[in-house]
Length: 172
Image (cartoon, rainbow, N blue to C red; front, top):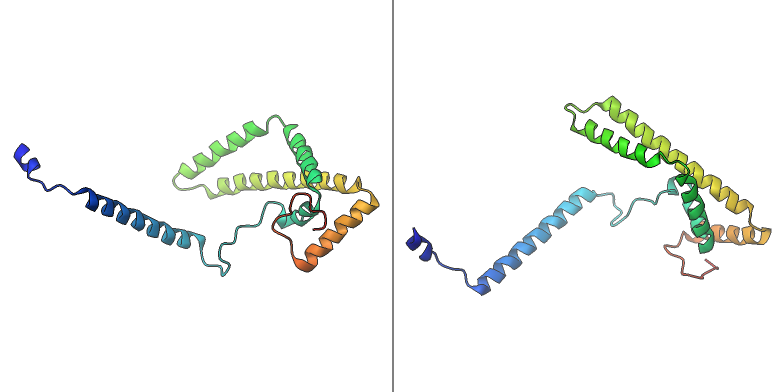
């Protein structure tokens, strides 16, 4: 038995490197093919889904706000969310419920629909909280500040929403 193992030809170091590189390239190609398949073909290459809030139209308004206003709004939204001490426990319970539904055979579509409906209600409550904080923020602005914000929104409407605002850039 030892003689059979000793007679087996050994792969030299150079060939070993070639084989490792070949394997890496094969995995890379496989990953690219899988990524293209999973991404789908929607004639918009490399598009990300819209950010949360954009479907209800507040994302452009938030982008037009000054950075300090956005930070203040974020703190206010976070404070409001923390007022519900049971939120984390509810989230964990829903995740456990989702796991149980997904493991069930067959999947209970009605239970899945109910649970997803609860997620939608929670998301709507968060959106309403953001809108309430946004209204408070905009109402507290002076007429000049609101006019500057309106000018930025008009610029967004004419020229599109910029991807990023540079720190301290007040014109756009």
